[in-house]
Image 1 (cartoon, rainbow, N blue to C red):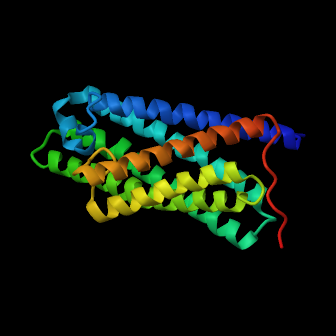
Image 2 (image 1 turned 45 degrees about the vertical axis):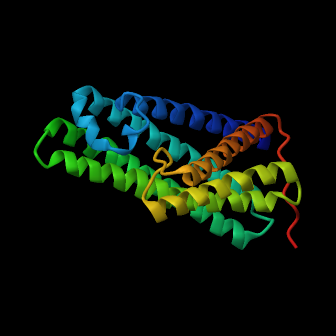
Length: 238
């Protein structure tokens, strides 16, 4: 029978798996676009790269699905960990996080199944359909919905942790705020992070990227704390 220490270490391993899956997904998807940051927002360009791009898109997106599912376990664990602090708030945050996992995974599955088929089909309508599919997933599902829901979960968890570990909670709060700003920017402009228009927009993107890096640091910090059994204890419920 597993002990709480075993479960904590198991969850730290799940976070490690998330980093591995998402790291591989990013590299493989970038390779599909020839590591061209600008082209990443224009999926129709993949049709000029042939079947190799189709396979890279398929496997990169499938690895991304695995990353989302792994993070779903993290969300459930954090919800159980914080449950006694404020059950209603934690339930709402957990629902938001799991909804982000579902939305993100659905988008990745669409890219993995429909995208390669369109690239190989090479019909007259395939390029605009592939462009529309890519924009719908990257800007719509991932850029707006996933960032909005993940941002709410991350910022909420950070807020709950502020009372017991200010630095740890503040880092999550910063990461969540960056996700929320990203979501609002994409919803308002239709542009993803790699698409910048003007100096002011560049400054916003740089601030957002810094906040997202803070989220990755927070998640890595969480994994270390779980592995070493030094996670912060949530405040007692009122």
